[in-house]
Length: 153
Image (cartoon, rainbow, N blue to C red):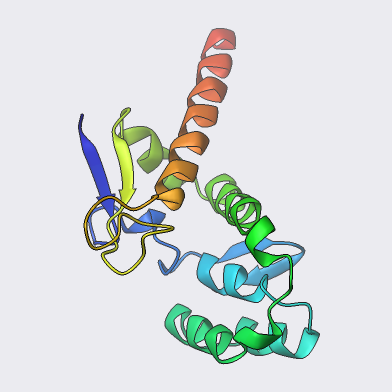
């Protein structure tokens, strides 16, 4: 099966650190990573500091520094939060929609050797949840495209 590996330049749009502003949860975020990291908290001060972080990398570092303040239900909701953020990103950018359709049925993999939950991990056998969310969204997008094609004259 063909694989689309993101975490690199060729498919950078799918990376949470990529420079696409995302309007999510009534807030404009500099990146999907900013939104995701802020979602870990309920303290408005911590959320605001993450929102104003200069980069996705800084947003992640700030969140890690406040890890003990993370919301207690985070592990139960983090998959749905990520899906919601990526769905918002997808719907806000035609470019990303086109790129997602261009993956043409390939397996989408976050090629991160450091992350076995969201990516493929150091051994390539990680859970790849981020890639799975992108594939789910691609399936929905394909169905939507097919629906609208039916009505074109």
